Image (cartoon, rainbow, N blue to C red; front, side, top):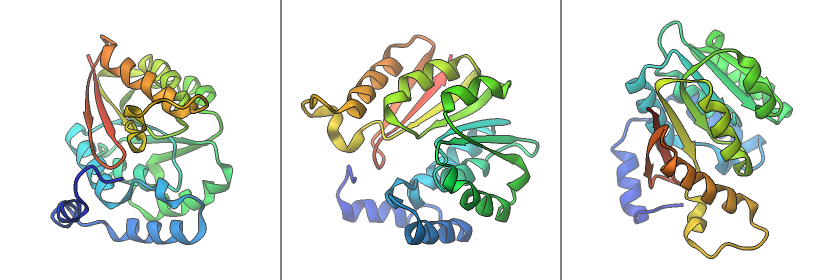
Length: 213
């Protein structure tokens, strides 16, 4: 979804950093072999994730929702040399696809994969995080937030994807639309929780940056 005219959006992308060749290959194979390829972060948002990670310089990163590994590789670009990225996805069929690209990158031995329910996996990770990226099932966004707040380092950053949900957050709520309902709750939670300060970016499908106070 474009929040600015498509021609202007194309200009923005053309004048931002180029997409790395490995990520171009990952994108091509995702579109060839995997369902719902629009779930990829993609070139522009991927470069934004990379830039944010490079500014933050995290030692520990948690990603909730790996998909085919595109965003994990972008976030890994900003890790400290001894850093770790822990990424969780419910879909075991994508594990080998992800690992192939992780191992083809400079960060293969720093990226740890987990398959299953993130709400069950996160408490067992036994570490705190400098940077968290939430990009998984929308109904659980509030639960993810409450859980990860217990494991965030001071001044840690939480990035949340799809918070504008194709504009549905400003449309009349449909009775059975649990994803939009959860995102409305989540966006209000980030706005009002005194433990974080938050700004919403109208980029692609909406990206929120929250800083832990």
